Length: 112
Image 1 (cartoon, rainbow, N blue to C red):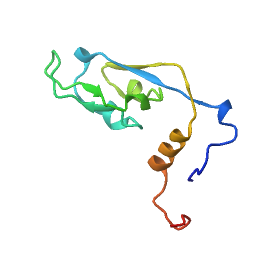
Image 2: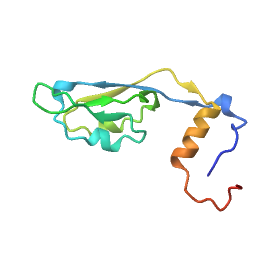
Image 3: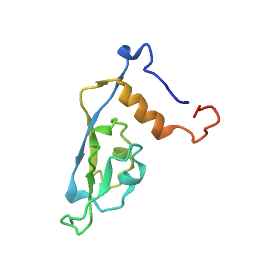
Image 4: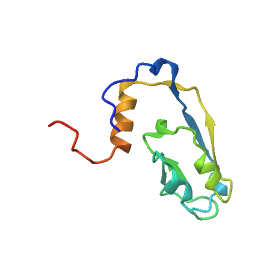
């Protein structure tokens, strides 16, 4: 579904924002947190930790973390966790970002 405007009740909703914490020396470089992050907030770093693995690092759009907790749940070494920061009010830019990220590529209903 494509949103073409900000919902009327947008003031009553907010987007949670998380802060990702990585314990680099616990990481064994499996990449599960990178693969299962729904917003793509993590990538594999080029540096090595004490065990000789490449731990994950935050990418530039790390503000996209919505504190879903998937990285925390999937990590077999308990090397990553998130912390809830202050929620953010929904803006038109957020609607545009979600629409382009999750929308179907069906263009039958879009006028040129």
